[in-house]
Length: 85
Length: 81
Image 1 (cartoon, rainbow over the protein chains, first blue to last red):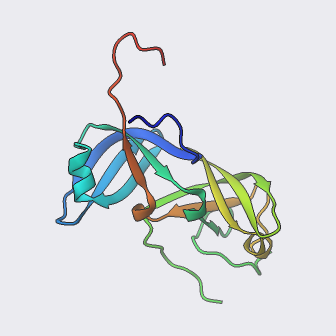
Image 2: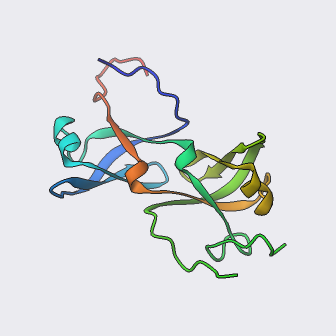
């Protein structure tokens, strides 16, 4: 079966640059244009998909899982305060 | 109010809000970051509390465990892109 479309806007295409193998889950770093996206997936999935360093992948995140933090002074410090301005 | 010093989320991208689509309960917020547009759906209460609007600088964060991976077919020569 081939997936032709998914409904998530947050899709990052890249290549696996590093894999930290664990017994149950593994940490996979995907080098994308402009940065790195980290994914933690089961090691079974990693093996089933035959993923290895260099594999071309699509990293997908649901919008409802994206948290926003407001920054002080336009980006100097992380964290937020609704009472600042 | 306590300030956050650091957050453990692996995926953090700073950017500016490019658009806000308001809803009665949740709102969709688009953030322009170095890795492209990131869309976030958060409660409209939060949008109001944080005064989030177009042009505001924010950090978009998500946990690595929320990132799914799809394997892509290696590109073949002659394939239309």
